[in-house]
Length: 567
Image (cartoon, rainbow, N blue to C red; front, side, top):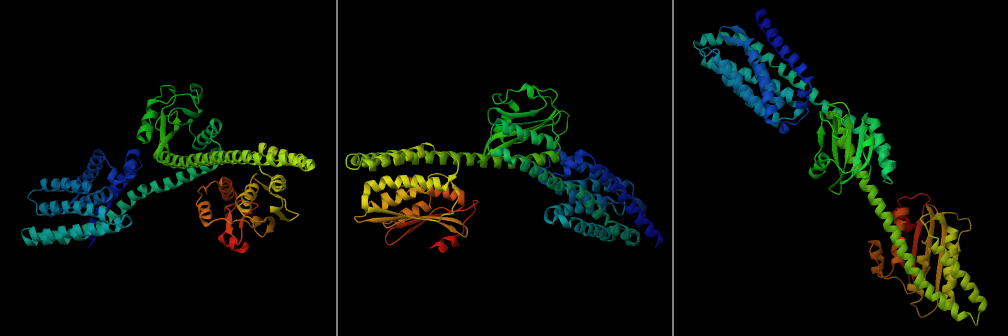
């Protein structure tokens, strides 16, 4: 019993030596790089290097084995199983063939040479199967069971092949327990190496957090992308990752460069290097860890990450270090995450700018439509009043001049709702001069309302009610302008007793499509949606039309229940 216990300790002793060697290997950058890669991404040279390492472990296990009546108590199977489980079938099978052949050749006529050859190859195949088919979390457990199974197979083959049988039985009685129990070392080796491999996820999480922190700091500068804001973004990135220089480019020029060598670049007009152009064309990350830049020889490490917008490369983020070999795996992970966030932020920023430009263009289109059309009718009304009603004509001139001044002074700033109402009243005064008793306007407005809104939100709705509602009716018509406090803000409503809006127009506005020539109606719907979360609420009445919207104190999504409450 003591003899068997001593042999078991000898097995664990050699397995521990292998474990120590592997531990030191995992501290080296090259081996850690192998561990951080998926097995499918290993090159043939990398697999050959790993196979050589585990083959040497297996051969060492054989050579350091304890001789027991022509057999060896060794850790060869432990090395084979560990290599195959950690690095895949090719490493396991080739290591099994190499170490099994070595075991056979050093003792061709020995009673256990052929069983050891067979089980070495079997261990390689089995370890590769575990690597491919078994969940990673279970590798160490299944590896222990598979190692014990292989050693058990060895014992069975020895009993079947050894001659005389008594010799085989004696060998099995002495080595079976130490070898089978010693297979538990496979679990320790697999867990050790996997713990280093799992550091990849910890690094990724840490770098993702850093990327998010940088993104949070740079977010305000993406609201208006220009040379100054891009330089501020580069400065934040450089400081947070301790880089020596950071640059951002588009597809043609360097847009911003901060740090070492900045004086060498003509920002905004500096053409890109061939290396950057190649990165933009391929869409692949470029890393140089021991190079010397032509323009800035003090730079020796850099990484170039493409920036994408709508599936196309539109620029790059470049990070520089003066020292060589500064582009580590963790920095690469962080840079990729940061570039993805930056790409999204830039795309959103450009979308917002385009939307703002579209809104301004739409506002100009609205103004150009209102002014000539309304001016023609206003001048006709003034002309017809000059002789018969000079006081009315004088007042209409005042109304028209105020109305035109209001339109000419329009800008992107919010205005007091009362100022918008003054413009509406001037418009209505001129329209009433045209329509006479045919048009009646009722104002139903709370006295204590004080809120700022964009210009031209209410007037287009009033015009729509008069031109497309009242004007088309043969009889008299009424327009009611209602502005009331509501639990969720201020409710604005323009109601008429005119012709009534058709369902097709309501549907087209809801789909953000131009409803005929009603550009003003769609413009207001767009702007109200953008500002307050919900567009116009349009209802056909009997007779007439009711168009309304909610002004909230802070832009927010208005629920569908609100419409039913007002109704």
